[in-house]
Image 1 (cartoon, rainbow, N blue to C red):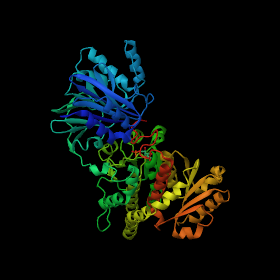
Image 2: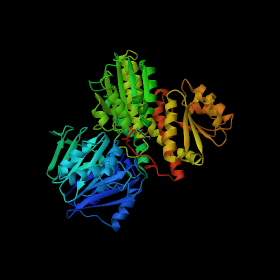
Image 3: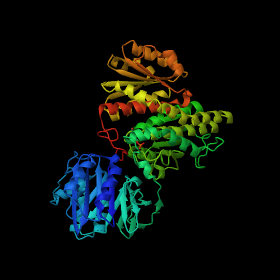
Image 4: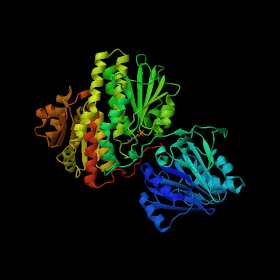
Length: 606
Ligand code: F6R
């Protein structure tokens, strides 16, 4: 959410910053802007809408200078207009910001009373005005920044650039991630490693409450008490190919196609050749845990909801799941023998992080399943298990979802073993099933032309329902989320058996109903619910296997025949048609698949 780049370079900063903002655009794309210092003078360019508009502006009105800051915005306070776009400037300072300054109204009132005029509606301008106020009092840039940071409440990653200072950036983080990149005679600041990857592979992650004075000679970090501290320089390994589209039309298409590979690699990481699962020693002994609490947001929550079936059915372990924004405020009691598990692609989702902090000191173990190993959620966990999906750029989560499911499935098998529910043969059988999933995904990708054709029949719908039972119910929710977020068609997921308790009133011949129904123990019940829909002229798209199609395809609008897979882990395979239907429906509608309206990847505000 909002991307930040800062450059103290040897060459012109603007082209480097525009390239970095392209890599960061998935974090927000309401407006973008850059500021530089050239010949001692601070100047900036800002444009509403996609980054390309800023690029066009820079063609007409270039910005010279080797020092600069840049920003791509996901609007929180104030509409996406030029005056609300970052960088915000006040006299001799320019500021870019990710997060929310919660006490900005008080600060703004204080400054207004001193005669300060504001030109935007943003919380961020308050930061710039407060720094400028301290500079007017005779403070140095570092003193003014320090005095300002001490007044800010909320969440922020900030980068500050000063008039007359071509070798100085000041950065700060509280609640929102920020990293400092070390080059050869150059230094960088970025909101994540993706921003910095082509510039340098040496990165210092700022800790909570840290702020930093960056010059070309290096960085001095201060902690929240303003004491100088050393933070380690880490080598990052982001394969540049993983942040390119690799010949695909969209990142989402590439990330869908990558799933058999990344899931197979993830399984290879946690399993040895004989099928033994290798988790770090810090993993709790599930044999002694009484309860597992799983918390996440959005797609990651649906991964938790799916895994609840696995933990309960395989391991007999009671599981409670909740969405993070609800969990943290209902203050749930956490028993001493309760392990808490947080699932997050970005590892930075503000609500999930806050829920994790609520469980600290209460739960017996804090575990996380994350895609970004250096993320805040990973760092604040007792143990973080990476899903190893590689960088996910498409705003709609795809490969992270299936890799989250893969890691959670391994954990459920381990828990079943530890609780004496599965013997060695049982574990080997489940691992064998999991190992077959990448191959089944490959077969499913072979159905892409058929799914594209089916999506053509969905694009005109106003409402679409998704149905599933058991572990297919969370997939129905995920299918509906995927479709609505990128095609803007209203979609809802329901447990098949729940339909007759109200939602069936929505059914008529204009409402496509997508039913996930592999042949499992619940198949006949799901088919009965499907018949209830068809009896009311609902247009059913049945997604099932060969046996299911033979038994229930008659009378459906369409049937998609999936490869036959064991029902237990079928949600991982059936996620692909859900994703592809959403993708091709969005293409048919002409929406912006990778950057859907109003959304941003990595939601670092509450
Ligand atoms: C939907 C989607 C979101 C995220 C949610 C949590 O496609 O991507 O619903 O799953 O914002 O994000 P993370 O996993 O980064 O915590």
